[in-house]
Length: 112
Length: 115
Image 1 (spheres, rainbow over the protein chains, first blue to last red):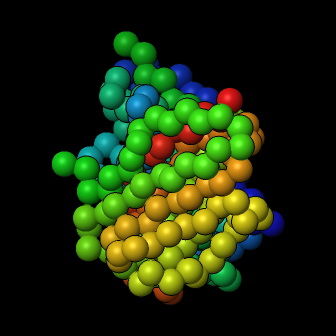
Image 2: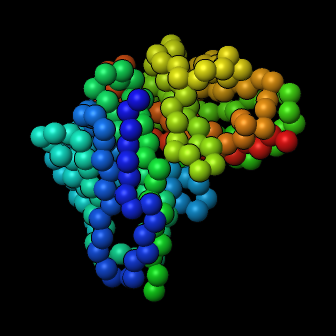
Image 3: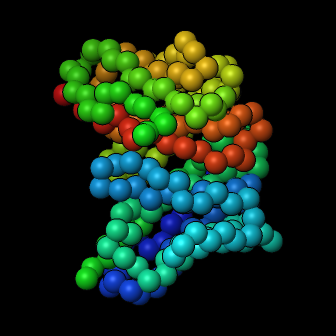
C-alpha cells in the first residue's frame, strides 16, 4: 500500500532556532496536508498543498511539484508553543475521496 | 468555538458492549470522515461520506457502522467491542469530498478504552 515516511521521528529544538521536517512518499501523491497535534490530542491543520509552497508566519511548507514524492515543513524561530506532534498526510491520485495516508509523526520539543 | 463537535471526549466500555460515537460539523461541509489513531500507529482512514452517501470504506470489520441522520452528522456505531478497538477516533469534514484533494478539518477526537 501507499507509504508515508516521516523524519525525524523526534526532534528537540532550542527556542529561536530553525529546523525542517520531511515526508517521503513511496508513490506520487496528489496533495499533502500537514497537521500539528497538541497535548490534548486535537489535530490542527497547518497547510494543504497540491503543489508549490505555502507560508504562514514562522511555518513554511513545500511539496515537490515535479515528482510529487516528498514534502517539507520548515519551522523558523521555534517557540515553546510549537511543541507537539507534527503529521504529514498525503492523498494518492488513485482512490480519491480524501483518503489520507498519515506518517508516523514527528514529536517536536522546543526547549528554552 | 469548535466547528466539529465530537462526543463524548472520553469513553470507557466493556468488552462485548456497543457504543455510538457522535460527530457534528458546523462548517457547512458536504463530506465527512472517520479516522482512527491507535497507540503507536499513524492515523488510519476508516470511512468517507459525501452528501450522506458512503464513498469509501477501509474498515475490515462490519462491527463499525457509520450513521448519517443529517448532512452535518456522521456518527460511528461500534458493536461487540474488543480491547483492540481502543483508540482515539477522529471525525473530519471537507467541502465536497467526491473528487478528493480538499483540506480536511478534524474534530478533537473521542478516546475509547475497551476493558
